[in-house]
View 1: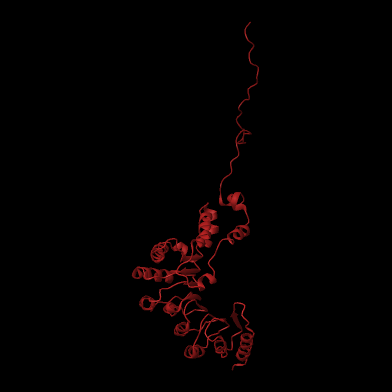
View 2: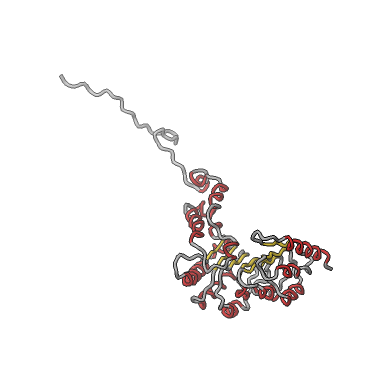
Length: 318
């Protein structure tokens, strides 16, 4: 007896009418910046991402004040994370690229020959940024170490870049070789960096400060910093509002008083030479409102009393 035919009903493939979608047709989503921002990693709140990034080591003023020849590699981790985030897609690049380049750090080394690494890094990054004009507006802070390695190549490129950046306001220099003062004079003299408002630098780098007429905040991380006062005055000194870790002698203080800057805040470390007279020397600035005293749990009641008297004298100064 012949086998019975298979009576299974086969589903017919119907063509949709009037342009309607078939129920068997998978729905696709166009990947646009708008849809990417609502799905996956980029859907997370920006505040959450930046909170996570805040747990990475960032360069702080305390790291620069110890005048290190270089900073350790752990400070690269945040940079690497931001670089990876900026390369996810166009939208992530738009979000994270400004944070990636907000600080230009050329002060971190990973090899024993740190002096060569600083020099080669400066040449490579300066030349690369000079060809990447779209990144210039993002850079607000530059943290850089200078050694004597290839200075005839390093400094011209650095100066050219510093003059080109439109929004850089802070220049931090953890370390400069002590014998580079005359070299700095040769390359920096005659240049002007009008956007720089805050600097942290060693005394031997004072020629940089002479090129910053809009300076507001000066911190010294090596030496007594007295020459920095002369540099500020020679640059104009009309905007100076804050001084930190600077021991100004009588001559330098007279120069500063004559310049009459709108000084509002000074920071004095008790480890400085003769902190009592240093605090008193600021009694002729009528705009001075804050005197910070840095201490290591040492009793500073007498310095607080001197600071109070000094601020009172400032308020009464004609």
